[in-house]
Length: 300
Ligand SMILES: NC(=O)C1=CN([C@@H]2O[C@H](COP(=O)(O)OP(=O)(O)OC[C@H]3O[C@@H](n4cnc5c(N)ncnc54)[C@H](O)[C@@H]3O)[C@@H](O)[C@H]2O)C=CC1
Ligand SMILES: O=C(CO)COP(=O)(O)O
Image 1 (tube, helix red, strand yellow):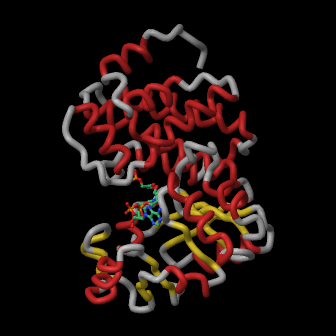
Image 2 (cartoon, rainbow, N blue to C red):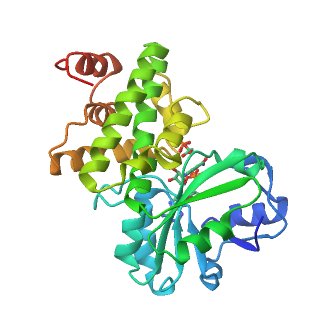
């Protein structure tokens, strides 16, 4: 809406189709691309821009930044992905900072299904950026009448909220797919949120950030809606049904990253741990449930 914007896609055929039909039939069917959106399959076209939004899955972001770092120096780079890289245990902003130190790194995150934004439905998100001048610039330039961005300087909290809610959404999907019930799901959301706060505190996140849009807000959306791919992936594990392996499910890889972070920081994150084991097929939902229910009784 505040364009012009250039959309780069790797696949030449897909880019040509989108440019011609003005629709992304594979990934966002039923929504007309705005007139001021130029679609290209040439990555060089995006390097003319001063602000680049990176909507590449979290496990691929580091490789992409490394490959193109020479063209990204000094630019505003806004990560739109939610996850923690398995090999480096970095979040998206830390990945930008590591690969392109001269860039202004930011993160756009919070509760929003792409289809809702494309339909101009009202949405509120967090724009996290440490830079006190560029942060407000990005907040203003990316907000629209229906897309309201709240500014935060806590990039660690924003990274963790987006990454961890996907893990808890998988747990909730398993819970519902296996028929454990809505009360059990409410318990998973709440105790999952406790795990989010535990890891946030260990890594230096502001607890307020996790109670905001990028934490609690996105948890509320993703743990309760089958619009979420992470939730649907969990449902498929719970119900034993097939799941399309080409679907982007960030929480599965991130659950493994979080388990490693937990080891490094000596943290107890039982829900994240069972999601890592469920996602990699090491345990089944009944075993996951028994593992969680057999833990010693504790104070809340
Ligand atoms: N779809 C949604 O509603 C939302 C998605 N996100 C986040 O956005 C990120 C991307 O998700 P979606 O766009 O929904 O997934 P998607 O699966 O629709 O699209 C991912 C795109 O990344 C491309 N890609 C994969 N590996 C790549 C690489 N190495 N280099 C360049 N491009 C590559 C794929 O070809 C595909 O076009 C995820 O982290 C997701 O959590 C965040 C909020 C909402
Ligand atoms: O992050 C999202 C909504 O805020 C999208 O969730 P999924 O990746 O689970 O579809």
